[in-house]
Image (cartoon, rainbow, N blue to C red):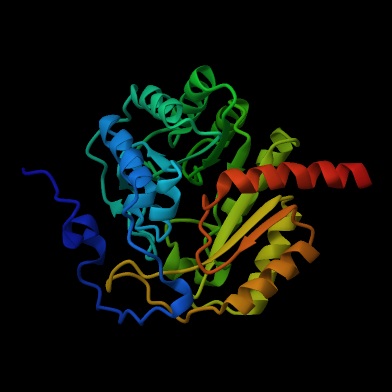
Length: 319
C-alpha cells in the first residue's frame, strides 16, 4: 500500500471528499496578507526542515506565516502530521496516524528552539486518540527538553482535549510547568456538531478549569473563531463561560475557509466588531484579549505573554 500524499486534498481529508463544495467568498481588504519572501522566513523554514519538524503554521495554512517566520517565530506541532479528529474548519490532515509517537521528537524541538533563539515558544499537536494518554507524556517530555536546553525560554502549549483519556493525564502536562496552558474552544457550543463533531464543549471548558485547580498560578488561554455562523449573544456567553473557568487570556479571530470542502465562511466580521468584542471581554475580567481578523492562537504570542504577566502583576498590585 503506497503512502498517502498529504498534498493531495482528497488524500489529506478523505472524510471530506464527498462533501459538496462550499463557495469561498472573496476576502475583504482587511484580511489580505503578503506572500512570505524574507530571509528570516527562509532561515526559519530551513531550521524546521533540518530538524524534521512539523509546524501548525504550514499545516493549518495560517495567514500570518510570513510575518511570524520572518521574526523566527514558529508554532511547532508535535506527535505527527495526521490528526485522528475531523473538524470541519481545520486544514490539518486527518485519519489514522501511520506511526507511533517519536521518542526523539522532544529533543529535536528543543534543538530548534535553541537554534532559533526563541524567548517564547508555542508547542501544539494533532489529536492522537490512538494513544492511551492522548500524548500527555509527550507534551511533558517536550517541555522538559526545552527547559534543559533553553532555561530562559517561556513555553506556551496548545493542547488537545484528552477526551478519551483518564482525567489524571492532565496532571502529567501541568506538572511539567508550561508557562501558559492553552486549549481552544474554537466556536460556540451550538455549532459543535457541525464544526467540531469529535469534541465536547463542556469537556473542553472543564479541562481549562481543572488546569487552574491543579495549579492556580498557571496562565490559561483559549480562543474561538468567528464568521462560522455564530451570533454575538453566543460569543458573549462563551466569554462568560471562560471567565467562570478562570481563563486569563482570550483570542478571537476570523475563520478562513481552507478549501471548498471545509465549513463555509458565514461572513467576514468587521474590524469594528472585533474591537467591540475586545472591549466586552476586558469588561468581563480577562487579563489579556487579542481580537482582530488575523488573530490566531499563537500570533504575537511572545509579546502577548509579556503583557499577560504585566497585567497580572498590575491586578495583584491593585488588590
